[in-house]
Image (tube, rainbow, N blue to C red):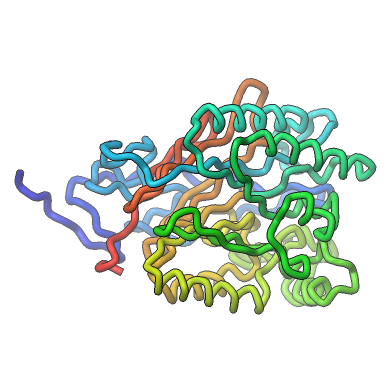
Length: 392
């Protein structure tokens, strides 16, 4: 068979007959809601990174290539071989035993139904029988949950996760911290921790390493009010956000709109730890998947949902060639992008915003050359194929 000609563009290698299109164009901004949001919706996002042949849509897909860089059928290259392993994914359950409501921009939220979505997810994962573990991408209980019910609600959701026939890895989200301080959350979620920091890594197989970042390491929520990380966060917000309501992006422009109280940052020590783990993974020739509640790329998320210092984190990640995929939650609408180094950024759709009878969860098949997300209902399936090392 005659080889198809190849086109090189911004370090991405596409076949001549590849088709590039957007799953969903940029629309109204979507933000992670909390009980302290401003009443008026912020102005629309004004800037976006342009990537992948100049398209500025939140999701890009390249179809009909030999190794599809972001196809949405969950079956790139045909499933001619078994995955190395598989794992379950869900994000932003945000359960609360309260009537359904809406975000401050009017998006319906189904607080009681979200735990039913989780129950179906666990049933699905157990039925699969071959999932090695599951990952929850944060925000298990909503900020509107009455504080007297917070501990009970967290335990109820944790109990549902415990019904999965395998380990579950959790990460902390802002809504978790609205309900309980991290000193209580970390043992309840069984997060490997040192001094209440919630970042860790694990190696399910010799070929792969997973790194879970603590996106609220530097945060105005979760730590004691006199903790150095809290003080650093408030000083940072005073410098970056002039609004009296620090959850309001009013007057902030472009990427500045991420400097909101419901976001956070990765601290200096965690950045040093990340660098060391990536160096070790590179030496072991491992492929790395980064997990964080907060997104790390503007192309995959609304600006208002980004990690405060996503750029510093990506600077560390881009020193190495081992990171292949970054997975996140927080921005409930979901999204996907491929950055300048060929790393996939996939933000997962929220379980909270599933109307009764619908779902948002999935599992990921892991291969040597790609991650294949098999989504259920509102969670979009996608193949995330890796760029060959020689092209980096």
